[in-house]
Length: 395
Length: 230
Figure (cartoon, each protein chain N blue to C red):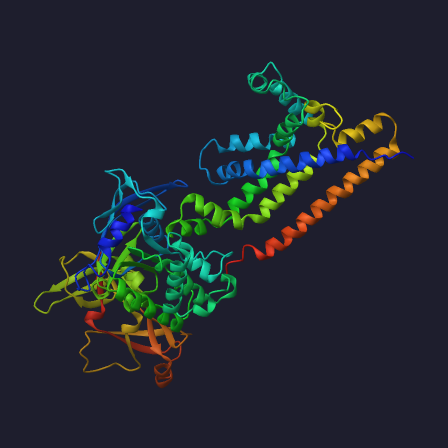
């Protein structure tokens, strides 16, 4: 308790310099090995999270929840160190393993885990047991106000909506004044409007408190909407980190590319390098019957000479589609092909075009109607050099 | 027709059942908690020992309890040195025998309901600063009330109707160890079927009433209690 209190003083915003990025840093590097069902899984990460949102992004099974559980103390890592500022939560070398209850790590689970037998107010007061009843009530009522749910105080979790439950879960955790906040897809089940409102309230809260927030998501929209920083986790390891644009704009790993949503990913071999133009020619090898039959793409220049193998990723939305051979274009790749299928998905149309390889192209409904597209039709695909993203070929 | 029902035996049985189920409620909680949450490899051994009274003939259990309470066992000698008399053929001895006999009927429903509590709720409680003890009393216990009621009701009803262990450990001393079931047995031995029937009917009606009340409450508790997470 003493430790927690002294830490609270050290971390209190009023004592910190008035710089927005200052504040306690979450510094974590640890390793956890699982050998369940003859399959080994190793989570091995090293990262720092500054105050503000850090997005933890990755496919399911990448170890995102395990990572959060290790920081919260629900899982004990095999090795490593986890600290917030100069407060050590876990250090295998020093055999420090602070109890979950003493870590001051706020954790909102994906399932929210509201206590079903307690009212919203009782849920929110649960983490304030160390305060006298009057203080508890005052703090709970303040946070319920901040999250716009004071009218729900006497309701039970089963009597409130999904969005209200998320707000209750956030309020319950934030009222304890955590030093770090872990959010495991807490907004996954919400519609965009509700989500945006809750995120605004969360941002407002964090403006005042400035603590590191690890936000797990596998929605790529949320990465851009929230992220000051993003950590991409893949099969237990950090495969990329930086600002969302850094991570997305220069994907090195194919897994990152798939996460970010390259609908078209092909194996390719560098055919020729043109350093003077900053480009190179890549021959697509996937799906091709023979050398003569394969597709050549002009792509940006990357390290590695002619003959090196890599992968090319192209977003379906980055490909233009023309119904006659286009002339006078700046784009370097114009590829004839034939539409094999057209499928409407919400407000976009996904066209599959056979042009030696099969490419997915996204169009608006209006574009489909204006061009009067139909399966079997001959079309030309237009792809800018810089729409071709090059990736390491993963082993 | 004589006054057939031995109210003294009935009263004694009720006392025994209340005492045993109350003690089992307290004693069963830590055992059930350990069974529900321990990750020890040899947990199954403890589970097997707890479940043993379900399959063991009551006379076997009663016999060993009698031996353990008797003056030749260390436990029996210790008790005699402490109090000056043996536990065998006393109400206290009956309570001990009955606790062992009804243990699985309390512990198994307790453990099942503890294990049924969403672990995320307990984890959430810990991240909110609650000690394991507080989590147990504030989260696990309230969400396990149906199981606690069931376990207590079963151990109560089971003790009400117990025969073999009582006979072995307590004998048949009116007002001390003579329970309803032994009374019924005595009447049958004496070919007094009418009286046996009357007492048996009373036991049957009482047991049914207790169980019906308890399950009635339980049914309500179940509805008020854990809500489905949607």
